[in-house]
Length: 349
Image (cartoon, rainbow, N blue to C red; front, side, top):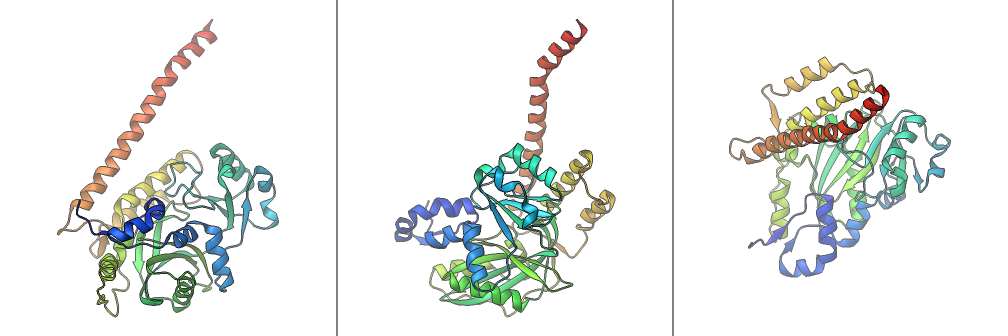
């Protein structure tokens, strides 16, 4: 197709590129980490070990290889806690969550029942303390061992509601403590190129912990672009031997929303309400917050008058997902109909 540069944008792409790294690099510009670096960032154990060795706070975690390890997590962790796959390339939870590798549990009974139903311990599980605060993302562009720029945003709303994909972000001044941790960790990994680090930060106490590293472009990279930092272009320039001209600062306090994710978040809350699993959250208030995202001054992650195609793609994707879900539910009801009729006939007789 005449392409001269490959820039991976998700973990699956990183995994597919890693075995062919040398062959591809000989033919074109490959703007991604080395296979060893990819393996490091995709494995949460490796990331946590390196970070802890550098004195970077990480959540207390315990590994679960079997159901026996799940019997008494309270000895090391207190509820609520996070359950996730140790390997970002694997998942265990249902498709109703935004991130199939993460669940937040408030009690042991619910955790055990959910993981048994979804086979969580069969794929190497990590139970992790829940850190209070907000999800904060730091994007760093590394070149020749130096950080060319650092960008920071805070998640105002996430999907799922307890933590996950950012659907409403607010840009903010770089926290120098977080930036120092991020740069030291990337230097330890001999990182080259862009990376995004997820922190949990409590603005009241100032406490923070590193959750994970994304060794590629992150899902809300459009937030940085809207604020004036065009990371994809900077990466392309570096891959072509050019020196990026990066502004000294970016827009602070800018709100940027992912509309599709915001809608899915509200629908997920409605499902939880129907299942009586919703914690004290006002659906009316959440609905008003969604509508408030249409006010002037709030940017959209995908909509642009100069390039509307991405927004049309997200609308089509949301419609397709809704239709597939409805079709599957209809199919399930049709398959159950003969069994229900047979049971009714048996009861009547």
